[in-house]
Image (cartoon, rainbow, N blue to C red; front, top):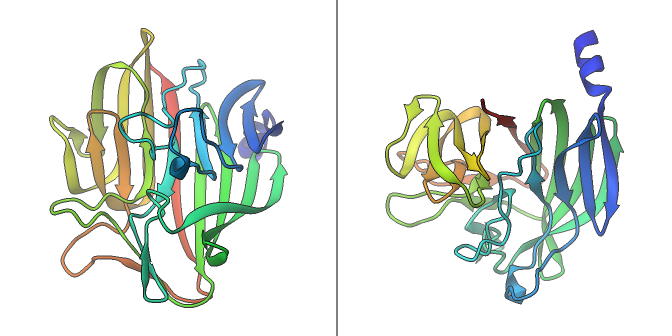
Length: 267
């Protein structure tokens, strides 16, 4: 307990303006949570989005992630979403922001090492899901993300990609320009891109401007993963296995997902 209190003493949040909420550790940046919609010049209007984490820094201030990459404009730092969102007899896509999207409702708490925000998943002006995001700094480039999802009007079913042999959709990270990419999992390094294999964690290591760094995502529950050498690591929630093809949020009954992200420098 005392160790946790001492660890958290150097962690704090700062409002940078324009919806950017930054977690710092002893004066060093750890991450920025983007609560307001962003759209860089030259990017299609339908890629505008909010409510994700970018950038993320190692303790040595190496920024490993990417946002709005030209090959996948919808990829966005550390983010969460599903290609299939079924509600009211309709199907939308919060992964690509088609027919449904995130919107900040309010910042509930921003104090010490913890941030808690309430977002909505809106289909036009109708809120379909309440999303509560809790981000807690753990020190040394690590933080915990808790997602609480609650269907508001009726059941909402979330599914991963429906392509054969895939099921991306869940909690993911997109990596920036780098050299010497290596992807490892709780079961060892992978030699080629991988889908639908269950792991407790996955990480990407590479050189960024000559500086070696690693970012790992650890899931509270082992999931299947989507792992790509071009720079993508994602826990597929719930994945695709046997009769398991989706996850249904029942009205008024929260579903909680928990992940730990660790960005570290390598020697």
